Image (tube, rainbow, N blue to C red):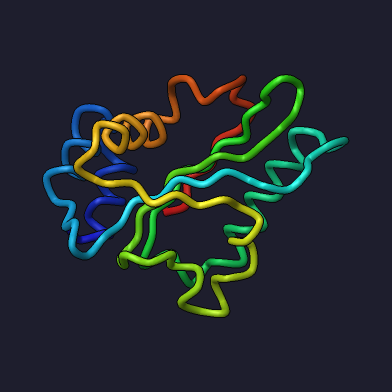
Length: 147
């Protein structure tokens, strides 16, 4: 898969009808891996914009990763508590954040789970996160795309 081409598909075409099918058709499972994440730090007392700023800050600190990754992050309110959830894919089978000190600043604040791209779970989560629609375990407060 050419990551830049995927990002153009995602940005300029219908996500459900064109970008997601493009993703699955062109995903090289030997090269790319898909991961989910959930914020593991307390957000008690923080407002929605403050938690959204955590995501924006992470994006700024991993700017040099942009050519190698794509991520969809959501701020979700579950039972009165805010959390951050996301789905990422990148050009390695390993957790990409450990490969460069420039990328490792925030990753330990999240619990990471690698997905099997052939699984139904991966197909469902890719669709939900790329579209940023569906059940995320609570009310969606904000959404951000790293591309």
